[in-house]
Length: 308
Image (cartoon, rainbow, N blue to C red; front, side):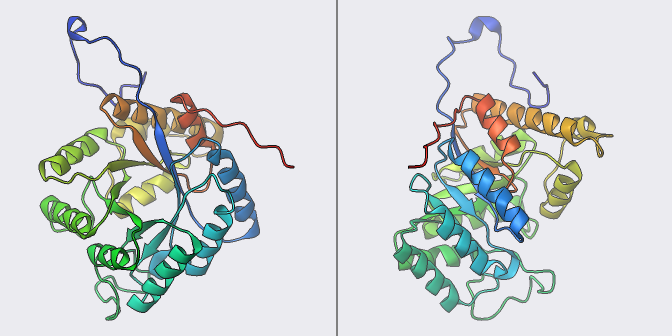
């Protein structure tokens, strides 16, 4: 067993009888493909991961609302599988209030009951400090508006290592509280690789009286350089012990995948030992590492349904 994620030491004589492992509950995130090749990859990944019985699958919304139409197309396609609960991302940056309301009403009318509500990111050409006047500027405003439209289940974002634009951890936690008070029913975290950061954040949320479920976001590492770029952008620290595992493997994708699966399995196992049962996987539209992690932790695929 890797020592990257270390449980607190407990004397052997004090250990209770091992309980049955609590059920592992998972959800998966996908993004709209940009070309036919990536569309085929997405279809294959969804087909494989859906057999693990996710609680829901989410579909992202590009910076500045840039994938609005493609997100809706993917949502409509995935909802053809009656076993899947599909949760579209819906963001306020890049969209007017009227556009957000129209989109949310359309989703409700089509049968969507779960949304992932995010303020969203500006595109590279749109300064974050200059949003359109007629928009929901903050995540809490967006959640409140969606609550007035229909009784959606609403997931929001949380940041164990503090949002890059927050002035402090306390300010960031207050922002999460505002989203919960506005009607959020679940918080999904930004990905992280230091479990201690998440567990301390969970304690802080509990101390602050935030009682909605807090779901850790897990990003299995395939291309380490890509994950490093993501981490730098959102302020996620990658522990040195993980960095060393991937050193010198830029040209060895098979070994990288094996190590990536091992790191994800270790991370989730350690979180489970600390009472976490729900996990949200950022799949990057690739099934292999997420599928391997879930299977290693006890999930098994449902039998495939033969076409009639």
